[in-house]
Structure formats: C-alpha cells, structure tokens
Image (cartoon, rainbow, N blue to C red; front, side):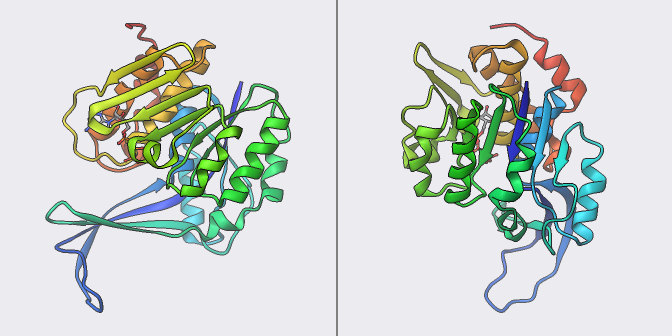
Length: 289
Ligand code: ATP
C-alpha cells in the first residue's frame, strides 16, 4: 500500500522581530531557524516516518533553496519526485514572529504552480487500486480536481486536507473519500458525502464521523510552545495508523494522531519538531482504546 502526496514543498524561514513592520519601514530582525516546510512535504515526511511507502510529488526550483531542500529531504524516508528542477525558484515561507506573540507569514507558490497535471501524472502511473492520493489546498481547484478525478478512475482512495482554504473547494467533495478539516474549514466548506470526515479543533481535540460511528478524541495534554505543523502531523499519523492496521480511520487512529500532534506542538520549528521514526514506532505500537 502506497501513499502519493501531490502538493508543495517550501523552505520555512522563521524571523524574530520586535513588531510587525509598517508600510515603508525598514526594521532589524534575527533569523531563528530554517526548516523544510509546506503542507505537502510536512504530511509526506511524517507518513514516511511511520513506515509507509510514501511518494511526494512537489516542485522545487533550480536555486540555492532547491539544493538545500534536496540535501535535507534525502535524510527522510520519503521519495521526492520530480528528480529534476521544475521551476527557476523554490517556494519559501517567511514567518515573522513579533515579541508580543503575533505573527505574519509570506508564502510563494510559483514552484507549486509550475507543476502541471501533465507533469504530475507520470509519477502516479504505477499506483495500484486502493493506493492513496493525498492533496492539500496549495494547488488551484482545476489541478486538484483533475488529479482527484484521475485517481478515482484508477480506483485510488482520495484524501483531501483543504488548507489553505478556498471556498470553491466545496465543489470537490464528490471526489473525496476521506476529508480532514479544521473547524474553520468545516464551517466554510460543509463537507458532505465523504465516507470519513475528521474535524480537528486545535487544543480541544478532534472529531471523527463515519457512516457507523461518531467519536471525539481530546487533545493530548502537553506544554504547547509552537503549534506549527500540528494539523499536518495529526493527519499523517491518522492515515498511517489506519493503513498499518488495514482499517479505515478509527478511534485508535485518532488517539495515535493526537499523541503525535502533541509532540509537534511541544517543540519549535516545522520538520524538526515532528516526532522521529523511533517516537512514531513506539506510539503506533500502543493499542489502548
Ligand atoms: P495547523 O496550525 O497545523 O494548520 P490545523 O488548524 O490544521 O493546524 P488544529 O485543529 O489546530 O489543526 O490541530 C490539529 C490537532 O493537533 C488537534 O486536533 C489536536 O489533537 C492537536 N493540537 C493542536 N493544538 C494543540 C495543543 N495546544 N495541545 C495539544 N494538542 C494540540
């Protein structure tokens, strides 16, 4: 069983500043970290760390950030396609953290936009019926729809995490088997007709709805220092837990996902904050329901 993640990969640069800049201002700041990020990459890395055969189809650029991404993702058990550069520039996010705890984020999408459906499909060609296609909200609705439609014709299972949210994504539910949304996305997009719906509610926990069950799993208590990537960790471990046991997402998968997300929020950074392969193996071995 294999998971294909079609999405984005970026360099996350975090800067610490006194206050968010006014128009025309020139301010001092300190770069506090550089990490691989992007929802596609985040989710693919955590799924692969759980021991699932994972293909990430994401564009990187022919620049220093692209070479840095390639060097660093080589340490992860995920396979990244395309192997060649797809764009002049890699995508990046600048995360500005001000001293009062507020933040502002600037993200580019040029590399992700440069990856067309025609460029992506060859990397899905060896997918078997039952393999999963997972997408997030970083592609246009046309590209997201085309890839899900193709996957359905091949008998693949489709998983959608519509973040960043676009109101038009509500049109895609007929093509989706498993939806993972936060409460804001659920309210805006009203997921309907999916066989499994998971609604995450931040520090409160998460809800699971299927045709036969409705479960709530409270968040695992932890000292939260940085919630970046909590949702990505949650989704990845939820899918992996179910896949490794050969079941649909269930109560135990919710528990595993909550425990993993609590590890991520207890540490700063993006990929560096995610649970390690050893931590995930120990966590996924627990069976307490
Ligand atoms: P992201 O900020 O990564 O985009 P999201 O909005 O997709 O997150 P959330 O609902 O914020 O997702 O969080 C996903 C899950 O992470 C929650 O259901 C919960 O299990 C866990 N989580 C989030 N915040 C906390 C916290 N402060 N303490 C413990 N667990 C948390």
